[in-house]
Image 1 (cartoon, rainbow, N blue to C red):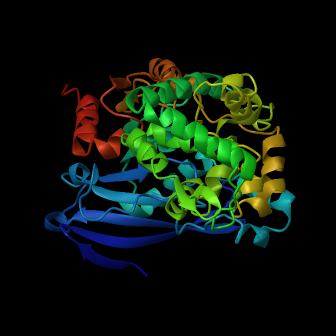
Image 2 (spheres, rainbow, N blue to C red):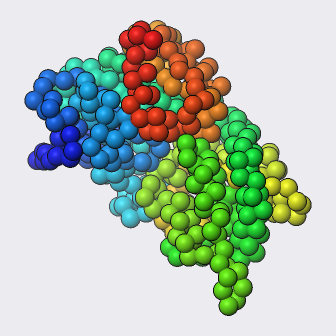
Image 3 (cartoon, helix red, strand yellow):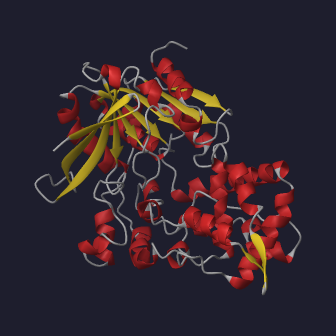
Length: 433
């Protein structure tokens, strides 16, 4: 049953679909997908082209907009928009500690999760597209990991696309996860250095907090064990347009005086547990490195292994000296499955995924080199989450792709920049810029 309702300026309709768990076994087990259709109120009865939005992640459901927020207002001028909760997220057969035991033990859970990468998401899109558009190709907007999915779409089912737009999400076509993180750690260090340049008082604050955490490893109210490495991972904020400011405001109220001496404030702990917990998006932690798997090499907890090549990120060594503590970000580590109560039951499942050696290629360089779909991509100059050098190499490999390289925005530019970012990219696909 479809249900329609209204918000200011828009009409929303809940859409539900049934798709195969394994698209290579269409007669086998099925899962349920959810998507929200959005159309401008004054265009609700018009025959409009469709735009499907693929959220970043992996592991996040489509953004829950109110009215015509951010880029959505621009899209609604000419499209009906489908905000898809990718499989395993939102209302689309969510995968986490509560639901995965339905599959069986860790081995069965790991096998199940191999069907939650970009290739399966794209095949979901192609399965539901005929019932949504009547078979007409649609425009895809892929943000971050949604851009990875978009490049897979161009590799495997370009006939389903009229236009493709990517924001902060052109992946390397052939990099192993180790290559991704070797490029990431120096980039993260630059972001931390820039943060301390903006807020020099945070150098001492971060060291003081890390020192306290290193010796106390406090248990946050939700049961999360806060370690020095977990505190460092708050640097994931630095990849967003307001992230440096958010981190600064977080650090400035870390301590309060108590009868027992200085302690982490309740307000600080409450905010930190919300930032660190994967309870709302466990799939991100489970398949984050698997999105880079394309050959017989295991990912093998790549971010953790590669971090050892950058000793400047070692909190204990930093605190033994007098240098600034380096934050980290955009990486998943095995210790997260020990610290986070939302992930603890899934540690063995995650280990099995990290050890897999049967990943299939996600991208087809030959087909991308012959691409005929109009495509444009925003590449953010020093994007903390997706390496710009990798993105530009991929841009050169996709025939006809036009890039907008900018340092005006961070990784969340399509949201922070509002309609302007989408407008610029659509214009590029139409040779209007």
